[in-house]
Length: 111
Image 1 (tube, one colour):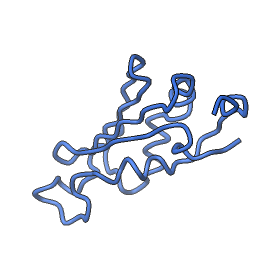
Image 2 (spheres, rainbow, N blue to C red):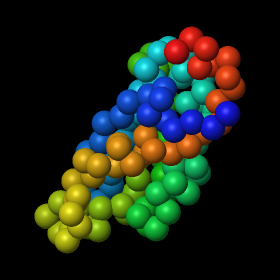
Image 3 (cartoon, one colour):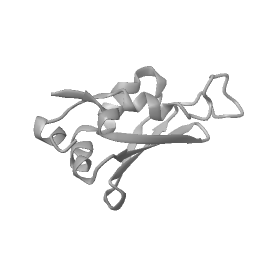
Image 4 (cartoon, one colour):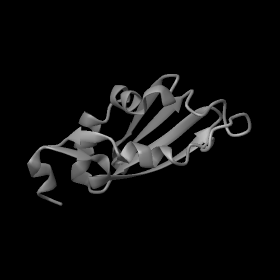
């Protein structure tokens, strides 16, 4: 079945220059493997489309049941240079949580 990430994760985001940094944290440890499988750097780049001009990097943090993404070239030059409404990338976490992923029904049975 398809669900939005917000059903199994929460997120935080911020910036470093022209790079948005998004942390995605599983709501339960048993959801982490689904995040690893479904939320790839490629899918995140596709989800954000033209908003991300550069590469997307993914880092796995299994001890935290979390993934961290760096979205390069996504802030119009950064907080002091950008004319974007969200030049510090604070809303990128909410945007990522709207991404749809495939989840086996048994994963949500623990919900």
